[in-house]
Image (cartoon, rainbow over the protein chains, first blue to last red):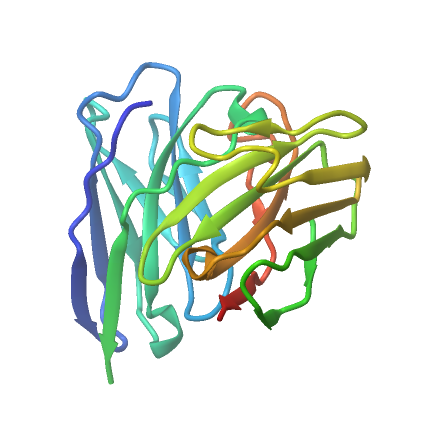
Length: 112
Length: 120
């Protein structure tokens, strides 16, 4: 499976935007970029996913580089509840039948 | 979407015993999976729970240690057998819908809250 690389941790202030980077230089043409987050003492939850174009939903935005070798998850206005581990995961087209391969993720710390 | 419930939420068990974890989904998901999250670590896929047939295990996990059942589309169990302290982890159930991972189709995975197991 293609691998992703994320910073171990990042820190941001409450009510400010947060940009979480992910490198995936060996991504294949059929890999989708998924983001999940795991709040303390909870199971992971889906955040967003995309293929080539930037994507927005109620939780976040996903900016994908033109060469698709990197992407950035954007939280537009972080709150204390956004403190979590964020995982960037590549998932092949039609990969719903496969389990997810989690890397170490980025531990996001939000300062009040 | 799907809501996943796991029981028990936590347990403390004696070494050498077995624990069965139950996973109930509120909709008929196509796929169900079991993960392990060791303390301070990320999630590792244990196996895919197949309806009405033997589970498909990932490298490093075997049926004798982690027997899995899935009698229907909404229920699965994971048993941790002959436990040792090294089995102390959080065990998570996940469900989802197979299909083309397009932007217009629901391909997100749903997770339970996990079962925190401590073996003493």
